[in-house]
Length: 96
Image 1 (cartoon, rainbow, N blue to C red):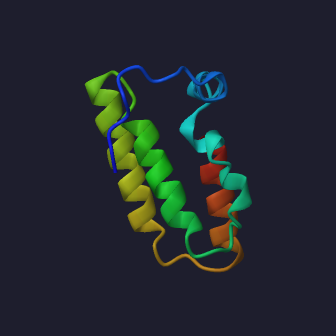
Image 2 (image 1 turned 45 degrees about the horizontal axis):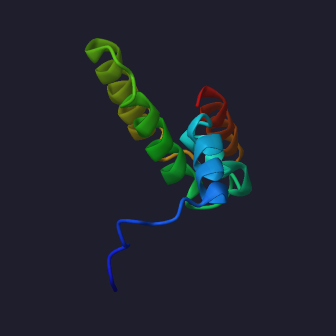
């Protein structure tokens, strides 16, 4: 593995792709709609996405409130199963 030479050629497609995606939120860039709400990874993915978005808030108090609220909400609903779990995950996706 060799480092890229300093005179690397500008790649127009990659730079367009990066610029086009930089304005799209992370959660939509990786199309979490493909993840079935009934899959075991869906709550973990939603939890991480909510925390990621909460950490982007500029105001310290609001940022820590959002992080605390996300953790508390997931801890309170940890034992939820069945249809109510699917409804809760859909509500969480809407809040994202």
